[in-house]
Length: 297
Image (cartoon, rainbow, N blue to C red; front, top):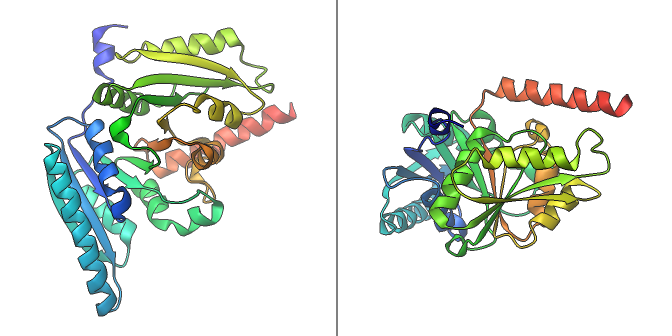
């Protein structure tokens, strides 16, 4: 691979919008943003208060403003440029997307609490709507382990080359943390079209795309989920992208990704590169049709 091709892999995030709502994970969101950006990046730390009757709104505003200021000070202690943002709106996701456009954000960082279930996904209109409407990349972080003690990052990959932006994120994250990285691919009994040799070749091709040293592992399992659970057993962080199902309301990032996030012991970063929603829907629909035809041939 020549130098010109390699240079295409490493754009830098210049403006990162961090949506903070809960003080329990606000600092972890900042730490994640620090790991995947340079010192030149500006962190815009935002809280949106739901438009309510005055007494409730005032209380929520004070609590939200305190989280923003505490988180901003923490980011500044880490040596980062950080700017506070606070808003009151009838639409929290709409306010986040509007703020991302105003500050020209190239990445939105958000947190997720609790299990990912169809009911939780439908009710979490904030995360869902931001994922579908954002004008930039979006990262959703499920915090379980402290990012200050990051030793191993697992990046699941399928039979095709993963999203370029996710590879960029993995490379930057590994460089910023000095953690060990591992690409994990799962072969199941149903993978008649892919051999171990082909899986190994795919993994080797992916490792050549990034400049940091990354290990590779192919796992034979009864299902992709079981294989990824095995591969993530000693991980501190799992970095995933959306499956084809994420465009449907019952999934946050796809059936396998959602189930893995619920069951893995590591923290999880779910990353979606910026994409027009109609493009995402059409790709997901076409992929679903192809899979259905394969099962009936």
